[in-house]
Length: 474
Image 1: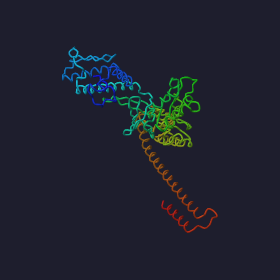
Image 2: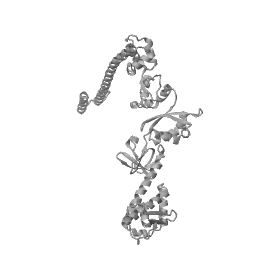
Image 3: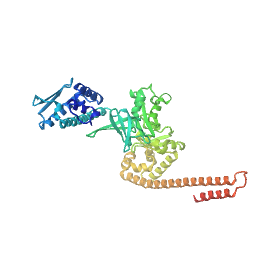
């Protein structure tokens, strides 16, 4: 039976055929069996006592199979944890036969039961071990891609990184080192599914804890974070120690600390924002490097209207709106960027619209502007109930004000669409004009109209005519 034990315990021999007592395998002693047992317990992080219990259970199953009994209490087995001696009993009496005499069918039963219980033990061990490591950074080795998901070996388990948790454009080859965050551990019944991530915001938070000791020691606290994986991240930090500069500590000497994190993220840009309890100051910090002139907060709508100069507008909005989008997510406010001209125009339209309603005064218009409602769209959105409370007007007046603002808002929206279409048409016309100018310049160069040069040949004239013809068609 020692031979069967070794075949089941040693993974490399699981598929080898079982042989009789005359084989070398059958002659292996129990001491070697116990050494293999210790090795598996150590390598697979499974309790040795549990493996011994599995061996005893498999032995009982093999004996029941050999004798053809269904009574679960008929056989008992004890394995000495020191020397590996097997004590198999039937109805409390020792079995008077060698385990090797059980035969192939009983041995196969032992093997199957042992393998199944071993897999269950390993699954439970992995579930327990990795369940405690959720939210931690680990380092694994890339193996392969399965349906877009990256399979990574971490210690003795395989983890999966779904496409949604990968950094866009990032690719790994087999054997590459992968640093990632354990996002979730799920018990799927027959296996344990470990989900890892490099795109989750907590991955960056853990990187800061590794690279910035003050963050790990909680001297510097990460108050908020907004991330678009692979492109840009904004991190708001604050220090509980007035002697420690939160932003400077995170950046490091000559940017050494932040550079290490950026390199790990393959060049993803990280903005360190100084946290402030004042929403206005926080929004101003979050929109840097753009310079903000004024911020108007509307608590009813959760909206911040930010006024910037014309030359700062594109910087505040960012490429494809990324800067203002991340600032909004970081601060929790819906951020609207306007130039002074746009802001004043909105106020003029709001004032003119409200004053057409009987019972509304200039003072009420100013009060709404102070509350952050700076356009007819805002008045339409807040509704009559808020207007009744803030302006101290009756329900009928408030309802008329909302209806009037709604009609005017539709007109303004249509006008904005027309202006947008006209601007796009002008842009296309300018592009076409630039192409025409380029074609004319090319033709003039060929014909030598730009300076003293020999007369153009017939081929040059034909080529110039062809260029001008194409330009006219475009």
